[in-house]
Image (cartoon, rainbow, N blue to C red; front, side, top):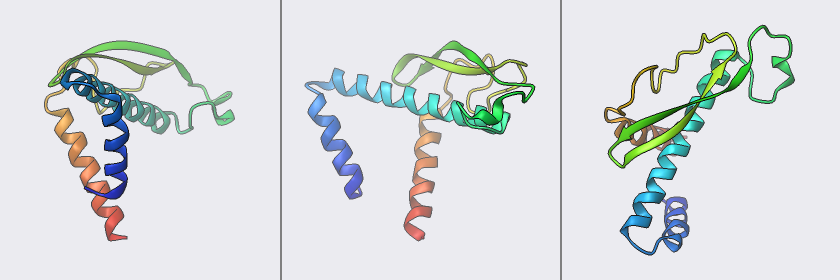
Length: 122
């Protein structure tokens, strides 16, 4: 484990009193990570970042969120999925109508591991 990871674990551990707190924290971290990745997909789809003036008059823009309940290894988790006004964005991370993560947790961990190995190689 790297120094920054140890610091994060230490900070998070201070918030937990029992195993239920740990599971709840992991569930919230998973939810937050998924929602951030979906926002990044929307940025890529629209070709501008959230709140950017580049979206003004673009012909398509953000149009709120839909809610979806995912069945994960950590239990059910409700996430917010950004939507675009034209309804053309099809998320790749969690496709429309998918409600099970199908090992998504492990894929996210693998992506993070690849990022870290690339970062360490630089």
